[in-house]
Amino acid sequence: MRFFLLYILAIFLILTVFTIAPAMDYSTTCTECHGKGKVTCRTCWGMGGQVDCPKCDGKGRIGNEYCSQCSGTKYVKCPDCHGTAKVTCPKCGGSGKGGPCGTSGR
Image: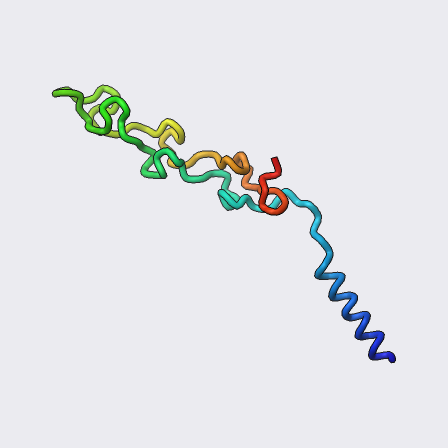
């Protein structure tokens, strides 16, 4: 009988420890940026933060002249990331934190 009561108590304690739901905590890591608050820019895809020049279509020249916007380099800074190749995470707003069950909490 004593063994049976200890057995029941042990099972109760184990179930109690493993079934207590964690509190709603918004400090979980964002699943999009993995807690960094920044993601790769989807305009330039991180390719040096540059995109084809819109004025010369990435050719570097307009007729016989060098393009005045890119100075003949064919590329300009990405308008979305401003040459950094990273943008603020759209899911967490740059906080790096997610909400319960992987949502942004917003």
